[in-house]
Image 1 (cartoon, rainbow, N blue to C red):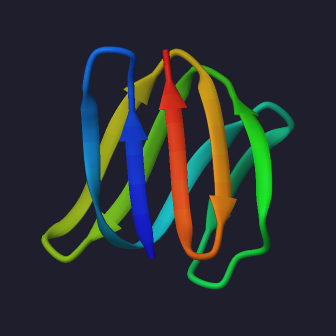
Image 2: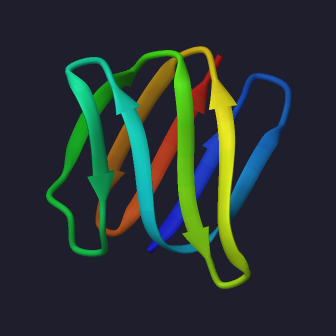
Length: 77
């Protein structure tokens, strides 16, 4: 699946990943390939994802996540 992490200033990450862990407003959740479509607000915390070269993380202060058709789009602030 494709992960896009976007801020107002830059594209933080865009690439293929196998799993994404997100700090949702109603609790942390994990997105795997084939996940149902959803939109969620994000709280301050860590976005963790696994790409071909290993696990990565990005600290965020909040944002919005959109999951649809194996594309996870995260707008952070």
